[in-house]
Amino acid sequence: GNSVTQMEGPVTLSEEAFLTINCTYTATGYPSLFWYVQYPGEGLQLLLKATKADDKGSNKGFEATYRKETTSFHLEKGSVQVSDSAVYFCALRDNTGTASKLTFGTGTRLQVTL
Amino acid sequence: EAGVAQSPRYKIIEKRQSVAFWCNPISGHATLYWYQQILGQGPKLLIQFQNNGVVDDSQLPKDRFSAERLKGVDSTLKIQPAKLEDSAVYLCASSSGLAGVDTQYFGPGTRLTVL
Image 1 (cartoon, each protein chain N blue to C red):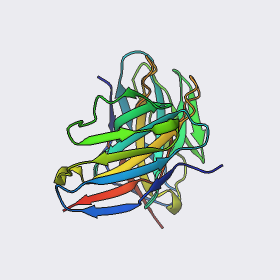
Image 2 (image 1 turned 90 degrees about the horizontal axis):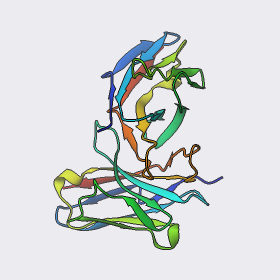
Image 3 (image 1 turned 60 degrees about the horizontal axis):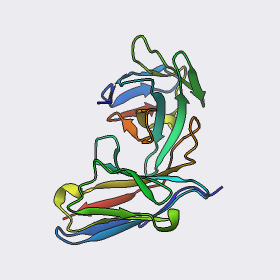
């Protein structure tokens, strides 16, 4: 079946540090890949997505590239801010059939300090 | 554009009691999802509706969980009777249902505590 593996947190960084959160996946076919963010007390928000190999998703300074050869979709940001503190979820959507559920990783908590 | 609405935001019940959650999706969205998010884990799909029909309920514990989406708009998820392990955040999401642009938008969730 489909699965997503994320690096375990928490990840603690100083403001303006470089961020990488690793994500790898297992899926049949050609899934779409997503990063969602969950700020404290809020629901999941879509951060970025990529629908095919070599696509790069980007938003708010975050980016991730769909790497089919390594089955990865690592999240990066060049300079994090305190306001980026949240839980980040990598997810995939199987594009076969009519069902379109998201399969999520376990989430990675990011804490950014001054 | 209004987002996905859910109520209540919080609910505390004792085991063996029943509980219901309500979701109002984004206007015009044909597809509606219920996910269960246990603390420290990623969300897990419970059920997916396309309009008022069920597309996927393979991970719904049907002996105690039920869901309906009458008229293809609002949806309710019910648990009867609740168990301790049902303590989780229940997330509702909706999407347009159009192939290739099917981004899921999530509501704020209902946090259920079963004592």
